[in-house]
Structures are given as structure tokens and as C-alpha cells.
Length: 203
Image (cartoon, rainbow, N blue to C red):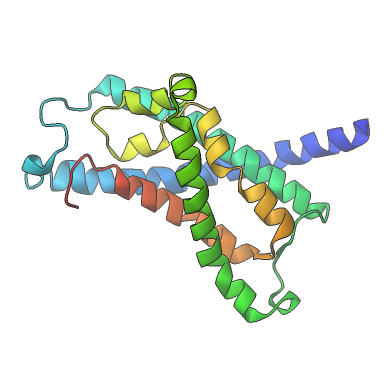
């Protein structure tokens, strides 16, 4: 048992740096792109669409959001490393050989993952707004009153864990085509969340 724990910890430690850097890079590029476009290049055009007309994000808010983003990225990377380790032990149904299942299973991976993620997010988000939980976890996210693309990564460390924990049972019980899952993980969440935090309505 002890040897298994050591092997698990060693595997996570070895794969964590690459996973962490990759996750921060994709999220950072997406958030930076939307910030440049909507907060800089189109700032004057969107001035009357701003949700917060009187309060603007200052350097203190940006620093806080970027600090929390480091922990959010770490949580996601650790969870990714855990799933990777479980896969090497044959404990997940993630596969990379197209001949393993019908081609339709691979094609269904993207919509399945997106729908499951959205379903899970909805109910976890509702739970986090419960008065008995909100002040301990989700309140940190709502400190950013003037939301911007970087707000999409600013959470209490427990929140990203709860929001992405669905991947463990999904990978354990459902055949998932690995490359398709990787594409979704690296592109869709970062772009989606950055797109939703422009601080303006009607976009």
C-alpha cells in the first residue's frame, strides 16, 4: 500500500509541471486575447454597454485575480495528473486507439464532455450559492464586481476542484477518446469562460 502511494505521488509530481504550464498558458492566452480586444481595442465602443459603469477594475483586483488563477491552475493540473495516473493503471476508460471502439464513440466524446461539464457546472454553481456555503467558497469569486476575462480564473481553491471533479467518475465508467478530451480541456473551457467575463452586456 505504501509503495503504491509513493508511486502515485511520484507520477503526479512528474506530470504536474507540464500539465500546470499548459493549463496556465491556454487560459492565459484566451483571457489575454479577450482582454486586449474587449477592454482595450473596443473599450470606447463598448463603454455604454458596461455592466459596471462607475466601478472599474483596478490593479489590486487584477493582482488578486492573477494570484488566485495560479491556484486554480494548480488544482486543475493536479486533477489532470490524477486521471492520467489512473489511466496508466488501467483504471479509466480513456483510450487513444480509434479501433478500440466504434468511430461514433470518439465523435460523441466532444458533445458528451461539453454537456456533462455544463450540467455539472450548473448544479455545483447553484450549490455554491447556498447561504451556508457561499461565504466560505464562492464569495471570493464575487469579490470581482467589475468582471473581466481574468475573473474567469479567480476562485477559492476548492471551487475549481468541485467544478471539475466530474472527470474522475466520467473517465472511470464512460469510454472517452483521449485526443478529443484533450482538445476540449485545452480550448473550450478557457475560451468559454474568458468570453463570458467581458464586463459588458449584449455581446
